Image 1 (cartoon, rainbow, N blue to C red):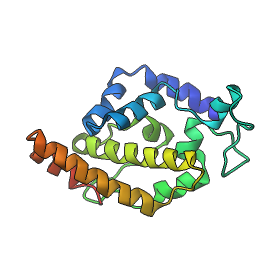
Image 2 (image 1 turned 90 degrees about the vertical axis):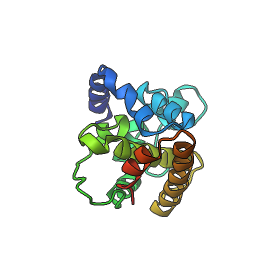
Image 3 (image 1 turned 180 degrees about the vertical axis):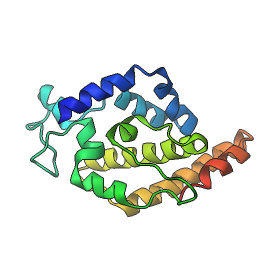
Image 4 (image 1 turned 45 degrees about the vertical axis):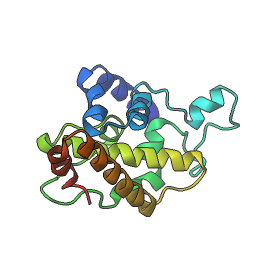
Amino acid sequence: MGHTHCNVFKKYILEPSIYTYPFSATSDTVLTSFQYKILHRILPTNNYVFTCKLKNSILCDFWSSFIETIEHIFGECPITQHLWSQRVLNNRGIMITLNIMDVCIGTNQCRNQNSCINFVLLLMKYVIYTTTLNEMIAVFCVFRNYLHKRINLEKQIAVTNIKLEIFYNMSSFIL
């Protein structure tokens, strides 16, 4: 299953536009760097860390019947699937179905809301990954709190850069 995703992942990597998604979603260098690692498949997972002999297993720490890969962490893991099923975006006309590649790479399905959707996807992935590193299970309330903090930070950045109208257009679709 992971091998199939890897082939699809390679197909998307050839699309130059995917590298712009995180920059249109946020100005935070930590988050854009995080997405860069996902796109280049250099985000450390148990599968990779095991090959470096830094971990004893390639399996997911929470679901030991799955190999921990980028696709597993962000889409195949039942814990992660539960998170994605939570209501993240307001239902103000945003009707999208995300697949594993949209989650990993970002989406351009919704013309006016791409930045908003990719911002939320990026934050959710970051929360999932950082909680996994701390051997904790990501729960929706942790994501929601982090999202609110990030929205406030993005607003402060928008005020500083005199881009408040753009911020309000993007944030009006979130929670």
